[in-house]
Amino acid sequence: VKIPTESWTLKYIARVANPLLTSAEAMKNDLSVSADTDTKAGKVTIENYKGKDSGDTADSLRRTVLSPVIIGTGAKVTAQSIAEGEKVSANSRILLLTNDKDQVMPDMYDWSKKEVEQLANWFGIKVTYEGSGNKVLTQSIETSTNVKKGQTLTVKMGN
Image 1 (cartoon, rainbow, N blue to C red):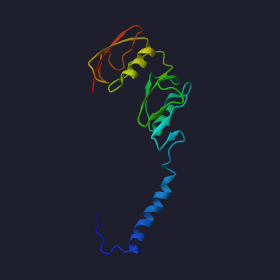
Image 2 (cartoon, rainbow, N blue to C red):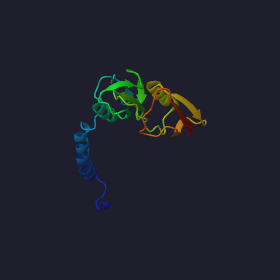
Image 3 (cartoon, one colour):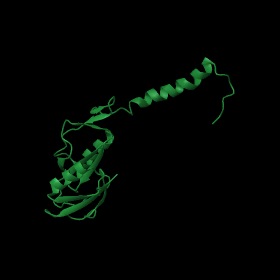
Image 4 (tube, rainbow, N blue to C red):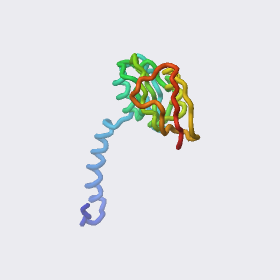
């Protein structure tokens, strides 16, 4: 960092600040937030993603500062964990089930109990919990393993 040798006159400050402000103004349009984001509250309104392309939907959600988790390898979204119209905080996780014929277990590390229950409902599996925390630490069914209806998943919870 170069220390200025001139005194801090208004002319000097203007010479430094004006180009900086001009650049910031030019960048403003590139950094604009998506229309469905309420910037004051840091909330994002969830849309209906059913029937939409799973890859495009995930990209769109990332741009609105959400954390999408695509369940399966199908091309279309068939279900979503957060209802249309609901407002959620930025960086919230949203599960998107695809039209994949195989049900493959995702990595559930750090998921909430509500998210685990949603996945269990979609897959038709039973869940047992160990521990007393509110986030998933381990899961009994390995990630990327095919899941069968009626199978039991044991989840260890912690903080």
